[in-house]
Image 1: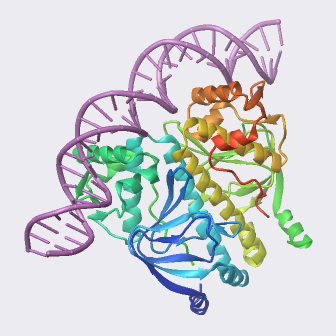
Image 2: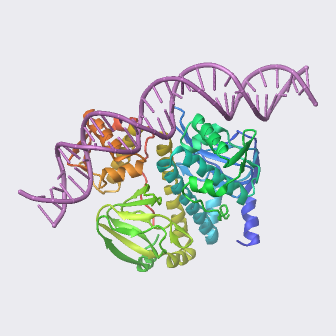
Image 3: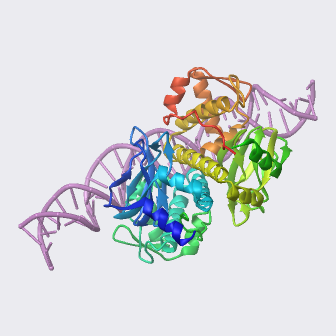
Length: 222
Length: 222
DNA sequence: CGGGAACTTGATCTCGGTCAATATTGGTGG
DNA sequence: CCACCAATATTGACCGAGATCAAGTTCCCG
């Protein structure tokens, strides 16, 4: 995408900030803007009336969140896992702009297609893997994600509580804790404090997580 | 989309047919075309080396399948659950055509966004619902899907074996069978033969399936 | 009809959930 | 900088939903 258009596009968006654990957008709330993350990590989730919550994706700088709507309302919730900075785009203006710029529409489709592949993979994890496999897969996934997208590296900060991890993997806090303990005892990872992790044996972690996760792709292109 | 463009577009596609249980496209195979289903039902899935399979979506006439790629290879597998007719579109030609027709690109993005919302919902089902809730949700989902998209109605044909349902819900054949039995005994559904189902108490089914499933939307717009 | 695949049903086992104490930890104010 | 404390994490004992194993039974397709 050329410089000028990019400038025009950015003019549509206003920079905003949130603090850790603040909500960027709540499910069922009227949609205004979606957001392109420039700093920090956000969890996209959906919750049942009885409180059961499923985190559907972890998003990092370069990704967009809050794009999916359901009758003019946000379809999911977005919560800041760290302090977050993001650029908000009015959805209507963006759509109009995209209609006039085919390459932008293509980039949007591309980003959505990537997200869809990821969710397919996530369904495999939730539906088929046992708890140890899920946790191993999660750690490998976060490790590459954060490294590739420069969120953090070697002493890897998860930025997620055990509860968040549990809600992402469809397990309980206790099971996540026990499993991390087991991986630590087996010398596959090292844990400092409560969310600093060092991956000691990446190969074994990948094997345990079954589904080799592809490292290469970047965030949504627009 | 206007008539003329539609004609052009259709000229890109060749009609094809498959018989029940044939593979439309295999994961990891070089991608040629994607398909817009015109008749029948297809299951989109992904399988681990050890044979565990997760069905990621059930697709019906109006939907597209085989669109997602991973380095030039199909990212998922598509299997015909019934005899299927579909229109194949060469992906490269389609992309070129879409680049020249903004409304088509927008329609593509729209379809992908809808699919993404559905998968988010599916993650909630796999990660948070108990077996009875999952089966109830599944039956309600299929009921509305097939009715809205005119696959079949009242004596509802699932077109899926217990094994398929299990692979979709992350359960085992036995659990699916037992759960369907329980719903039958409770008078919520009626079962004829092995895949003909009549929903007797739709409200109760929806309640059990927790996550009220939205009926309205149609297939991918192109 | 006949036979093989798909389904149901029962008995048992196991993984992960639940409940219940501790034990860390990291954030806060003194 | 340290001490305190509420939040988070760990650990243990026990339980139960759903998986596994193993027969039967039904169905449906040729």
